Image: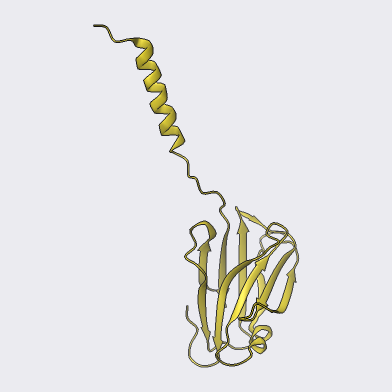
Length: 154
């Protein structure tokens, strides 16, 4: 009994097609962000594999300390970028607008002296949001737990 060549070719093409379909990831995106304090990376997150909102314990910070936020939309820096600090009740306390990135400077930098006074009391937490033309609804990046006692850590 001779095998049917046409049947073998069709089965081979079907197997190749199925393998090709499963070779690609179903997850799209690629947005990511980093939060740095004084040149030390405190948080790096890839949005499509997010572990949820992280709390950054920023203790013993001074007003001269600098918080840098980098947000990447699939490898591209956004336009019309904003960082918003909201309280635990989701009320906006302060909004910073950043110019579109040119050249290599993509950081959105904020001095801690502008953030620390926003706390209602020593136990309150502040929520750090990012929004842009590409992400107008905004995204909660992290919760900041700040204090002037202790040391800076994640």
